[in-house]
Length: 222
Ligand SMILES: Cc1cc2nc3c(=O)[nH]c(=O)nc-3n(C[C@H](O)[C@H](O)[C@H](O)COP(=O)(O)O)c2cc1C
Image (cartoon, rainbow, N blue to C red; front, side, top):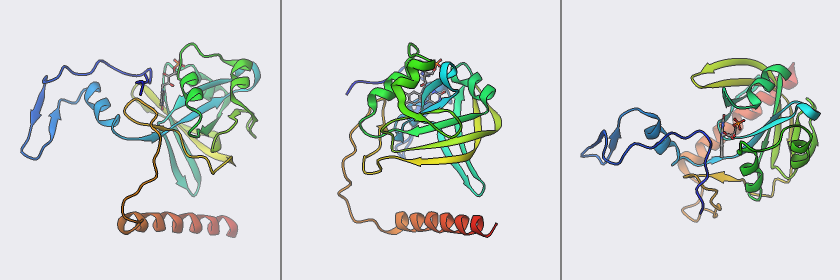
């Protein structure tokens, strides 16, 4: 598989440089960008396209640093590099939309991670999913899209953390699988064939379901 640049990489540490080995099998590195990248590239994530603005003012960017932060209130966060084109746009417009890409949207992920991509109406056309409630464009064929009004901006080094209040949630064709990013590539997800869902996983899934139901009940009571 072809390696994909996130546009954010640093040169990796030379092999053997500032590396210690331990009896427990850890290879401990100095805290530097290449080391953190080496660790995080092992962590598979979904992929989204974050958008903001309408018409000629549209900007979109591929992002995987997104978090569903809170269910009560509904808060969602995206981490955006301070020099990314979409950064000032989110601040100016005060809203953003996050389209969660499906397995067949690698092309869209590559397009919106490319510095040469279009803004404005050509970007709207590439996304093709119409406007959300905020006015931000959505990606047609995405699994879902989450729209937020900007609530707060927190400094995060060379990135800023945009925390949004969720104002609309759109579900697309949920039978499609997700687009996954892992070790700089977009691998196909193969169904897990190990032991059935059990133990810690089921406990944490039940805990999550319970929190979702409690939050829904609280909202109804208001
Ligand atoms: C899978 C993937 C995930 C990315 N996630 C983020 C992210 O969460 N935040 C970010 O600022 N850039 C992220 N990037 C990098 C931007 O998409 C890329 O740098 C883009 O060109 C934005 O920069 P620009 O507006 O300066 O062109 C990601 C790229 C890829 C391929």
